[in-house]
Image (tube, rainbow over all chains, first blue to last red):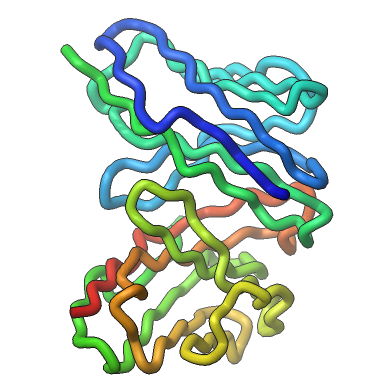
Length: 111
Length: 116
């Protein structure tokens, strides 16, 4: 079956670094997305990985290992505004390229 | 560039009443998605359109849900009659390249539905 696993909640301190992990088991793979969702708002696109390795984009980086079915989102120099849910989604070509979504990780930033 | 527009933002209705949600995608985006999102969960796909054609509606509860995208631009999602369990956020998203391997989805703000 299709499954995306993420921790439910994480807490980190302003200015620190946090890593949010995502593991997936899907019948097919054609890319992994990370979205940020503030409470009561729409998900907004953060990153896309389709090849193994690290993609860096400012304070945010995303890593993918296809052989391990594993990704992480790394947030550096945390700011209070980074408090949000972070959603991992895998595109599955065997499901008509549908995105299979994780439940999201709620990140709480403390001063 | 304007983002995905949805209305209304909030809707409260009594069970068994009908309700409709409207979405206008980003200009030029051929693919449109309707999702349902419950609190603490990821979005669940209801239906995907390529232009005016529904190419994936396998997860749409067709006994009470319907959708249309008559001119291949804006879309309406309807529930009739609504049930208590339909309370959720209904998200619309669009993408430019037909939902294939290079596509990124952009979401609207959603409609929060409360069924009493």
